Image (tube, rainbow, N blue to C red):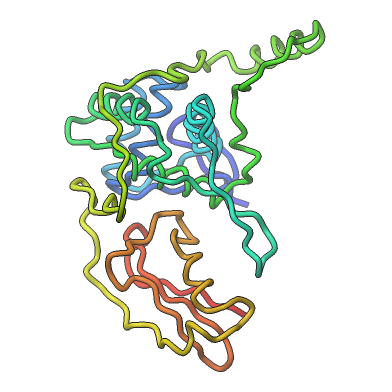
Length: 278
């Protein structure tokens, strides 16, 4: 299998272990800003990578996405915030995702500050950070994002300390993580009622496409799961983890030759997408 170089670390790895960027991708902004925040890379390196990504699609190692998501998850865990989970009954798996309002504002402020240092025009919001987390959660095993801190640390034995020291020698380029339960100058609001967060003023220009309305009969029909229950699972794009806009007709259920099909529109994947059941 072909091996390609990662733009960030310059290591040649199998292409399956790399992720392609897209120009002006919010995921790239959150990735680089977070790695700067947690002292994995410096600002000069982040600027170099961002400028290259704006010009043409680039490749980053999976591990960089995992590291950034792990540090963000640890910051949330420091405040006692965990991912939301549910059981995907047809597949029999537990699905985890991050709620937009669960991302602490002090973290957004810090990531935003680094983003502005990379480029004055860059904007980071709770929605964009949660979409980045969901993008990673949809591609990698949840165990990869286990918090790097423990809420109730236990005394370490001499042997475990030795192992930790040896591990640190293998990661000399990675500085100690910053932040962990900082404070924010931005007040956090508790909103009661309908969630209007998806109407963020900084939301990317999105498609104006719409789908036809779902046949009401299909919503009550039972396949493997009830139709309306299945549609409720499509809060996020199965491909990239981006939250699907609920304010337009962006999800539709249809049936063709006894097969169940969910049509949806993802702003990040650009255009109409389709999921087919058996």
